[in-house]
Amino acid sequence: MPRDVELVLHGEPVTEGAGVRLRRMFGYFEAPMFDPFLLLDDFRSDRPEDFIKGFPWHPHRGIETITYILRGDVEHGDSMGNKGVISSGDVQWMTAGSGIIHQEMPKGDAHGAMHGFQLWANLPASHKMMEPRYRSITAAEIPVAQLAQGVTARVIAGTVTGAAGPVTGPAADIVTDPGYLDLTVPAGVTHEHPVPRGHTAIAYVIGGTGVITGAAAGNTGDTAVADRTLVLFRRPDGAERAEGEDSVSFRAGGDGLRLLLFTGRPLGEPVAWRGPIVMNTDQELETAFREVRSGTFIRHPAPAGLDR
Image (cartoon, rainbow, N blue to C red; front, side, top):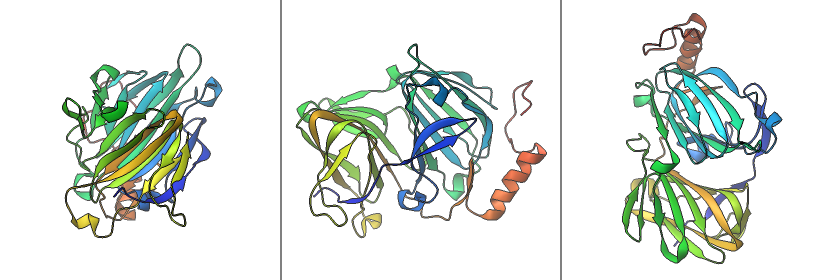
């Protein structure tokens, strides 16, 4: 049986960075329900004034940030010396670990459109202070799994068994064993997708309409979804101690359905969170911000000329 629906959210507009207008689908207050995920921002806009001021230099510690671009370009740089442009279809998977300082400056495309998403994933206490690492994944490196009835999955992280066999995404060796899929379901098709038992499962609709097949809280029928609808699925009782798989199920409407599907192993640890830094205790947070102020935050060798 597919999982039931635990929660449906439609997000709220917020302004971040130097003045970027975006829609936060979940964040600080909802994070305990989404463990190991902390935040999901949707920054799709066709108006450059909504995003052009960008996210100037800022620190991160204790988390991973995953940026997925559908349209437009984002220029980036960091304290490890990485720099470049993330373009349409690309993914940036950044593990902040012990600390990184970076900037992300959206530029949009030739028509002034900037469409993308940023997901934050927590790191367990045992890996909060791991060596930072940066992965740039181009659109061409993301494999597509062909599933039954014309369903396709761009596999960013995790493994999907397609018609030609297992397809594994390029974002591997991640602590929380995440799955990150971009699923397209043709009009009228019902697709039941396996997810690891005990893992958090989240669907975020980014195009079309449809229904989530499975009971929701206070509703014994299906849950209608459309663009910018986020669904958290309920983990079966006792699932955190079980192995194997269960599933989530979607039925596309007349215009098809496109959604992002995130899965991850919950950490079950205390969260101390302030701004761009997420640790386990308030003392660890104070230490991090004291190091930011004193210039001792970065543990890795910084490239020559970086004064941040």
